[in-house]
Image (cartoon, rainbow, N blue to C red; front, side, top):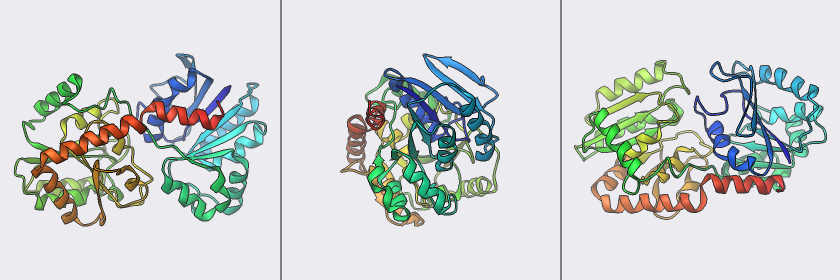
Length: 379
């Protein structure tokens, strides 16, 4: 079949600027292109051509300035003028794109992938939401939580919902005890940043209040392991190392912490795996209703025990003994208790990490994701 995938207006594909959706598309595109002709639309980028074909996959990139309306003003005329017929048009996380695409491609099957709650009434009015639900063949959701959230407002969508969890590259994210390259990355990062043999507590993500890293910094006041260090990897936005008010506040807190806190700033997408290799415990501190952060898959693939929050889809990733759930994400003592337990019992923490790695191998590889997408497409 001839398939068109439309990414969001925020970041380009391939994921040279990062981005969970862009990483998702990157992870499955080669696998999907083995069975179908694939075209990917994304936003333009100064480091990428507007049009190119790489390994048989066609890329078309359009100006958006990060604004959906500008993006649509460029995409829809392109689809209207192109003579190419697409059997399936797979739209990512933008239900507002569905009806404009339908207006110029009424005969194509449309699949919608939802990575956030974009059916929220603040983002999509009820009339358009009803039309979108009626028009699409399938609504793929990144977690059961997102599917349930959509169905609260649109119960008629229930029969079209299909959860497909994200995935991870097992060769890139690997336990340092099982992979020579991961061991080298661990040694390199620890040497470059003078971490030595310290116990590394890791946070990876955008630095904003709703992601909660400030609570983790506060938790350092209650960490008993004196050779611990907290590493916070991330920036205010992808590829953007500007110091926001929140980041300034976070760094000021870090300077007063009794446990050393290192903030790395933005780390290129192709290098972030090295920090997982260097870590001993991974903590996701989401305060908001997180759809299901992809950092969980990366941490598990790297063999790290997880601490995550009872928010949104995050609890769906804790299965058996691969990690623990913080019930009150704004309570630093709850994080500290779990971190202390893991650092004081490395044997059990190691078993958690191995369980997480096995979960990824069994359920969350890009092969699994691509296979599920092919089923949705009817391949």
